[in-house]
Amino acid sequence: MDYAVYLGDRNIAIYKKGQGIVLNKSSVINDEYPIVGGRISNIEFASKLIKDSFKSLGVGLTVYSKTKVLFCVPCSLEGTEIADYKRAVYCSGVPNAEFVPAVVAGALGNGYKLNDGVCLSIHIGEGGTDIAVIANGGIVVGGSISEGGLETTTELAKYMEEKHKICVNERAIEIARNEVQTLLLNNEISYKVTGVDPESGVSKQFWLTGIESYDVVMPIYSKIVKASKQILAELPREIIEKIENDGLSVYVGGECSNVTGLREFLMANLDMNIAVDVHSINSSINGAGALLDNQTFLKQILSLN
Image 1 (cartoon, helix red, strand yellow):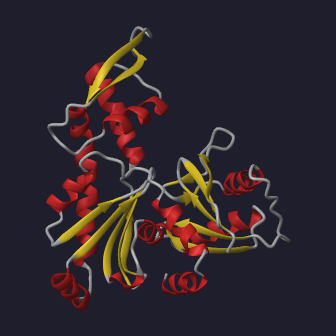
Image 2 (spheres, helix red, strand yellow; image 1 turned 180 degrees about the horizontal axis):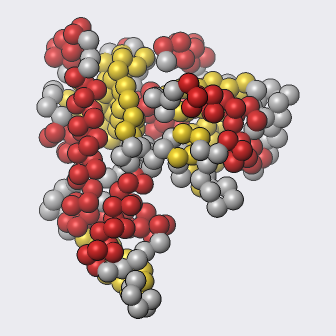
C-alpha cells in the first residue's frame, strides 16, 4: 500500500507512506458533498473527488496504475454500500484498493496495539458516529449512528434562529460550534456570531455562550453514550469477563471529537472501569497511515475486518 485515504462528509485526507498527511481539504465537488453519513451519495462525484485530490499531489490515477490505496470506511457498510465504494474507487483510477473500518484505524491512530487486549473505539465524524469493541485488532461488536457534527450544526442553527432570531450560514455555524461546543455545564467560553435578522434582512451579531452550547450538544452526545452502552451490552460473556478483570480502554477520535469536556462526560456516563483517551481529529487517517509501514500488521487487520 502506498497511500491511505479518509473520505469524510466534509473533508478528504490523504496519507503518503513515509511522509504522513499530505492533503486535508474540503470534499465538496460541484457544490455538492458526495459523501453523506459516511456513504457514497454520488459515485461520479466521489470518483472525481478521489482522482482530483491525487492529481493535486502530482499523482495521475488510471486503471492501469500500480498505486495501492487503503481507504477508511464506516464499520456498518452493507452490500450495496460497499459496492458503491468499490465502484467509486475503481472509477477514480485505483484498481488496487483495500478497506479498513475507520473506527479500527482510529484506535490504532490513538495508540491501540494488538496485544493491548480489548478496547472501545468511538469515531465521531461529521455525518455520524462509529462505535466498536475491538479485540486483537478485530471488531467484536460494532455499529453506526447518525449523530455527529452535522447534527450539532443543524441543532445550533435551529437554536440561533428560535432563541436569538438570527440566520447564520452553515460554515459560520461550524466555526462557532468548534469554538464553543462543550459538555461542561459551567464552561464560560463564548464566541461572537454574525448573521442576518430573518425578518428585516439586517446584519446582526450575538455572543453564543458555552452554557447555550451545552444545552444543544449534550443531548446529541448522550445518544453516543447510549449507543456505546448498547454495543457493550451485546458483547459475548468471555469479553465481558475480560473487561471486568482488566478494565476497558476507550479511544475517541474523529473530526468532531474536539468537544471540551468529552473525556469527563464519557467517564461519568459509561458505568465501567474505563480509561478514556481523546486524541487527534486525524486519528483514523494516522492509524491507516501507520498500517502502510507494517504489511504483516495490515494483513492481520484486513483479515479480521
